[in-house]
Every structure is written in C-alpha cells, then in structure tokens.
Amino acid sequence: EAGVAQSPRYKIIEKRQSVAFWCNPISGHATLYWYQQILGQGPKLLIQFQNNGVVDDSQLPKDRFSAERLKGVDSTLKIQPAKLEDSAVYLCASSLRQAPLGTDTQYFGPGTRLTVL
Amino acid sequence: AQTVTQSQPEMSVQEAETVTLSCTYDTSESDYYLFWYKQPPSRQMILVIRQEAYKQQNATENRFSVNFQKAAKSFSLKISDSQLGDAAMYFCAYISNFGNEKLTFGTGTRLTIIP
Image (cartoon, chains in turn blue, brown):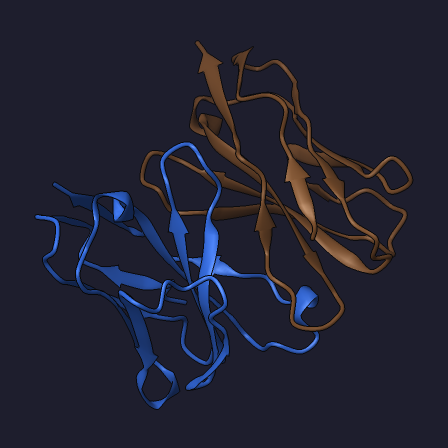
C-alpha cells in the first residue's frame, strides 16, 4: 500500500513570495490533515478535511494561508505572502475515517521543509 | 485544553540496552487514545505504538512497549534491545475520543543510540 505522498521535499523562498505544497493521501482515506512543525516542536494542526469539506481550520492563519482538497483526494496548501516565521516542516497526514476520531490512526507523509529568507 | 509533556529533550542508550522515554498528559476526558510516533532525520512521522485509554493492558509491538498509568496520566515508552535504527525524535501524542478533537503532540525526545 502506497503511503502519503508530498511534494516538494524542500523549498527555499524569499519573504513575501508565495509557495504551494501538494499532498496525495493514502487511497481511500477520507480525512486529510495539514500540520506545521517548527524546529524543536511537535506538529501543530493547521487544517483538517473530511472528504472535500473543512472540519477544522481554527489554527490556520487565514490572512496568508489557504488550503483546498479537490474532489476529496489531493490537497494543496498555499502561503501568500510568506513570512520568516513560516519556516518550518509542513506535514500532511491522512486517516481512513473520522468518526469516532480517536480510533483512527493518522499516517504521515515525508513532509516539506520550507525555508523563508 | 489538553497538553502533552515530554520532560526529556534528549536521551541516549547503549546499543542492545533498554531505554524508557517519559510522557505525561493533562485531560479531563476518560475516553481517549495515546500514541508514540518516531521521526527519523527523513522527517516522516512513523507510528510506533497506540494505546486505548479504556484498555488496562499495556500495548506492545515487538521491542516497543508502554507503561500506561491512567490515574497518574503517564504514558512511557520502553524500547528493548535498542538498535541503531531506533535513533530518532520520539513524539508522544494524545487525542480525545469525544467530538472533533485535535491530535496534540509533545515537544519530543531525541534518542541517540551509542554503538
């Protein structure tokens, strides 16, 4: 079974530029998550999709971050414009179903390391 | 809000020896799940072990086992017969089984294996 795929693996941009990350979840997984992991910290949830609907985006900085999940499969996360503090690893994860949430293990992709100069 | 605390930023162990990583959490819920994830330098978070709070029996997965103390809100990970491939960051994580809760991670413990 193929795992969660993410691209690119690395990205370096100047501040105020825009950037986009792509995620392809495990086939058949209904729920998709985007996390931000700042160096030295644990991942923090940015947004959660159930199929193609947003379940939780309470910690997404909506003035600069946006995300979509087309047709309930692939997802893109965009930052525009980027700030220095956005430098982090962006992890995508997926799980088979949502309810009950806790019984479902999340499987993670390899992440994208973003450096903002 | 739930919090997860890992008080050991770094740990080291001799190859083939046993090491225990600590994790405590704070919650008012009674039904929840706890996880240990491993993150090697490749950055991919890999599930190591999962524990359901309603189960009294401690989870085990080959060389990995947990000591789950629900009353003390403690969830430690024991790695037996440590191998070089075990070197990684280890994250403890919590999620409530009620409602639409988030997976909450600790700050991680960096484990070094000494040959």
